[in-house]
Length: 134
Image (cartoon, rainbow, N blue to C red):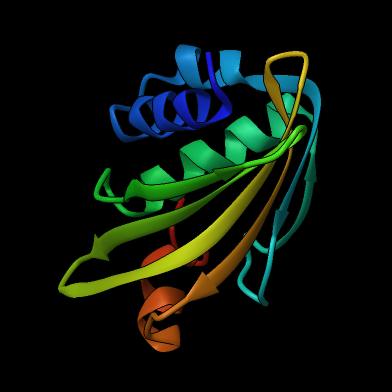
């Protein structure tokens, strides 16, 4: 499986909330780097912590969070994708893009970095905030 196919399948599993499949794409000691100052931002270490984060992002958006990769660049150890995303919470909607860079090791995602672009920061904070959501 090419790196692009791996990431495309990873996003498809996330969008369908197939958490067993998502987990299978992640290395045990994955490092996941979320930029910004939101309550989910920062470095997340290990498959369990990353899985909790990914599931929480879907939970706080009542399942509306979707991601769509639209292009790929591959190197010997990395794949980058231009990903488009959308989510809503109540009456607030937010959409944007990001450059997502994944390091692949032994056929699994070992590290991930995200560089967001083109979104409304206030809407993002409202939609993805963990505050006030059990």
